[in-house]
Each structure stands twice: as structure tokens, then as C-alpha cells.
Amino acid sequence: MIYRRMFGLPDWQLRDRFHELEQMRRQMDRLFGALTDGSTKKTGSGVFPAINLTESMDNYYLRAELSGVKAEDLDIQTTGKNISISGERKIFDVESNAKYRRRERDAGKFSRIVGLPDYVDSDAVEASLINGILTVVIPKKENAKPRQISIK
Image 1 (cartoon, rainbow, N blue to C red):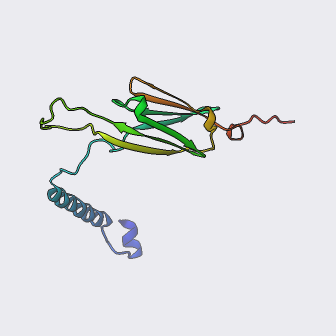
Image 2: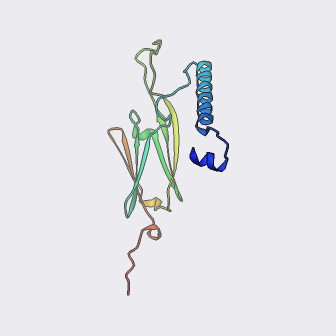
Image 3: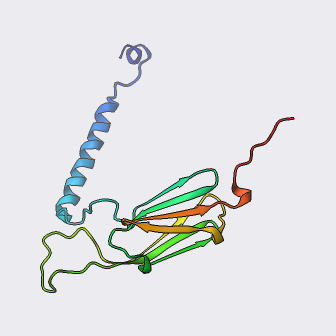
């Protein structure tokens, strides 16, 4: 404040301008929320299956949540720096004419392609499905593994 008076700078209140922008953003959110009636909001990220990719010195480990999916309904392929998981989740209704009051589990075909940082050894990939968790062990190629370099 003293700085502005000493050097003759205008006394604009920048905080008030940002406050007005924030109010306008809130009004736009309210407007769009009223137009959609909140029915377009989804729980979670909407991506199936949820995947974690971790790495050790020798392998990548891909873990996917696939509850309700059988191993024979899955197709796993590796090419270069990618791994793809595709399949189908089937959900059987108790009655064919039942009305849903809430439906959060979707049925149908899915496909996920995950990019890996380095090339992998496609011939040595192993997968297991235990209790709805798919675990894929993806070995790195020899040239992608870190090497210890000795100093002479």
C-alpha cells in the first residue's frame, strides 16, 4: 500500500478481480449442474480394469482388478513396448425382468493397452489370475536392464 502511494501506482485490487472470476466460475458450474441434473456424474474413473504397473530390476509387474472375469475370457498380448489386456465380463441377472435400483458394475467387452518404458521379452511373460486379481510378470530385455558399471 505504501509502495503504491510512493510511486503513484494505481490502487487496483487484484484480489477483487480474481474474486469476481471465482464467482463467475461457480455460477457456470451451477448452471451446467442444473442443465445436466447431476445424472452424468460417474463414480470412479470409469476405466475398467483398474491397473497398477510396478517395476523391479528385472521385471515389470502389471496387476489388474478383474472381479467376475474368468481366465478363459481374457486375452493378453505383448508387442514391443506395449501390453494389451482384453476380455469380457459377464454379469448374470437373477431374473430377466428385474429392474435395477442401482447399477455400478458393468458387463461387456473391455480392452486396455498399457505402454511400457522399455522393450520386454515377450516369450517369457507369465500371467496368473487369483481371487479376481490378474498378475502379469513381464521380464525386461537384457539391454533394458540397468547395469552396474565399475570404476577403474
